[in-house]
Length: 455
Image 1 (cartoon, rainbow, N blue to C red):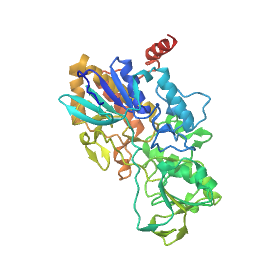
Image 2 (cartoon, rainbow, N blue to C red; image 1 turned 45 degrees about the vertical axis):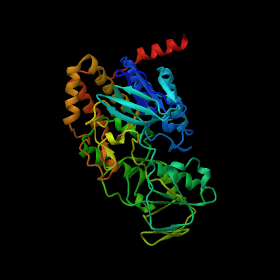
Image 3 (cartoon, rainbow, N blue to C red; image 1 turned 30 degrees about the vertical axis):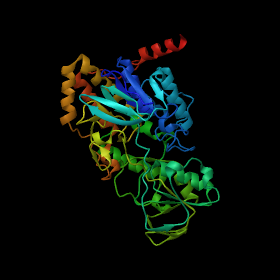
Image 4 (cartoon, one colour; image 1 turned 120 degrees about the horizontal axis):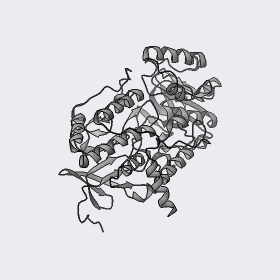
């Protein structure tokens, strides 16, 4: 029987989701002694990295596209025994070890989904899927952006199998089939390589060219090279890397890849070292956009045709916050959030993880969770400073593109440059006098968690 909370708990915060973003928020709140509850609809932590989590877009061959040394939570590095680009099972194990090390599990209620979030006065009412209601001072939405598959429509009727990449798990699913992958993002490129190695024939349909970046340059993970090398102005960095890629890869158009219609760095990086190998060996072929379906035949815009058994759309996801959708200002499928987190119209409603960035996400989550936690702490302990930040949330619209003119697409509407984003977070922290993340800052939380475990 559904029950209602006997008395409001306006001092508490609700975190929705126990993936990487939700866990980052939990650690930040715990460090400052802010009471919170955390709800996770699945049976364990890990979010999309858990292949058993219903609806996850993860597949068996998935690896990080950012490297081990640049990808971990702040002050909690991935094990040295991990490879340069960890696989999904390693990332899941690492994420769960993070939750254990900081004692985050006791506050998580598993197998409990949030059905609705409603603003009530200055607080928020959260209704669970069993009808139970709880009152909170603030709500952190951290349920991610890859749960609503986007399926394009093409003219004609296809008599084979049509799927979205969210349903893909194993390369063995392609055995004995002629496969067409639609889309060439990072997942599309990965899955195309699985098809190249297992299908009877493999094709990739793409509408535009992309800059393909190998995962290693000179034996060093590419993002490490970019982060740790000299920070050149964009006008020097772009031609340097363009020349370097041309030297390493040659002219990729000879393998059927269209010439990019945009400059390097103006779209989400496509990091893949295998696709060129399979293109060079003829195990996968590039095709243009689909014009129409004719039975089991796919007709492309250049007039070419292929008989296909499986069409798999690697065409991305629509961003959704279904339990609180009406409280976010959406444009081109992206919410308008200050610093990609703070709701401009509804105080203490946050969207953590609703960001596209040209860098790894875990440490980014930690830096922004730190600001969220200090802002919530100030509301009780330094209200004048919190009021200054309230004004920033409403009026401040910084340019976070780092001088890069990103593609004019829905995906890139919320896109930010990592260096520009971190620099502006630093500016905000300094203006408000908030503490920066420094090595050892979470040590007291870890010590307390380990002491509790030993007890």
